[in-house]
Length: 425
Image: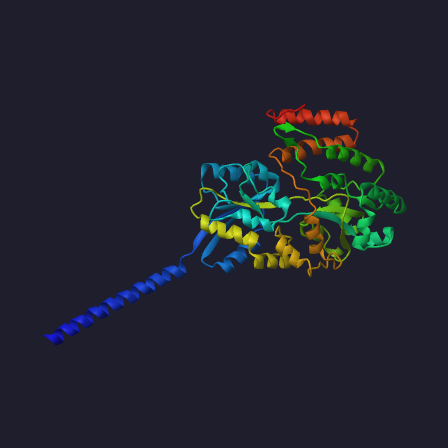
């Protein structure tokens, strides 16, 4: 009897052990084979590098990336967020559109727990932080791109016409628009009209990007915009402009051939404008400070407030903005200037650009970023600037509109038509 009981006991143990082992194998298999997934939308393929590195660090998370280029992106994004129909967990927003989306309820409040983004964004530049918060001061989107500007210049032309290509000395020579205009007049004459100081009038207007057009529901024209009207007409009259339209074949050729001395541009212009349009001019460029500190462009990243994968979404957002190892790698491999001051200041000590003649461009942009004015932009600014002011500007430049008074009248008329809710004097 005792023997039989022992055999039965052993048999039960064996069965239970086998079952537990089988169950354990199955459980282990599920843990390692199942991937959690999030969906990310963007209007460019720029995030591809970050996604690749994110999946390397978090192999149990799969990112479904959807790139929707062109003007339909923002419309499609709004529709998806409003209807909750296949809305992304994470999405990118261009600087031009951030103010029109920052207060909508579909952007998760990242200031609240467990995100506590208010503490994290202290690592970023003030001009970036100013666009990350809604009207109540809550962080709704985080800008991962640092976009301060400077004057890209041809070193060979600087040596020929200024006697030096040293960035500090060139900066001293072009600290005002009058300085640039005087150089432009001389260069135009000495070159037989083959070389100009600036590519076009937009080189001037873009140097003041970001000044808001609306305050407390009232349309306001900042004095700087009046100054820009004067400057572009004067530049034309003094034959300082090369008259190459941005993005045109002539504009690209001017970089390659050395037909323009100075190009105001942001950090991203190094990769996407100069290297793209003039790849054979490596070493012929430098960076100098110009008449104004400015920023241009930028991309922000937000989380869908109704996502059921907020923990994964936040993990990606935090990685893209605050993982210092990744950001350092991104900066070095992609020549990418981030919004993170801590990372950029560290890289500024050693990182150089062969394309810019060995200049410490991270050092240059790190200092430039700290000088960028901090504006509280409005949802009206993009449309007023791009679709109204910059339509009137060339009309005034070409004397189709004769006086500044007429230009102001035209601007106010168009603002009233586009935004009847605004108070316009």
